[in-house]
Image (cartoon, rainbow, N blue to C red; front, side, top):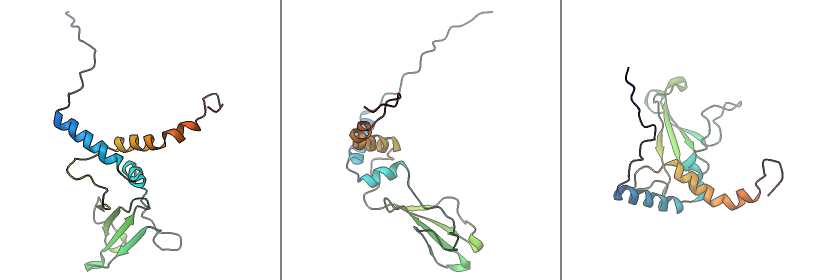
Length: 146
């Protein structure tokens, strides 16, 4: 029985083209110019939940538009940090008529012509902005402060 030996090294990372490097640089520059609220929301929006309160009213940050034909309403949620609007059509009795909400982004939020910006870039920029405060109050694993 013959055995073969294979290299167990990791495959080399694909090299980026000049266009990809230029795009990544443009994306990083765009993210650096974003407002703090937009940086936070590019990591995760704080949309209000779609649930009625105990009083039977819509929660803060959610409003309904309608009724349209056949009792259809448009439920709209607003991100309190950046102003993103996410809306869903609902039918009679609150039945969702679509699986994914429609999004309307605030001015200046989207990067035009740069492709999708990874949330990792926003995380890195957010950490860069708070790093001095973050590390100044850090606690050592032993419990003593720096």
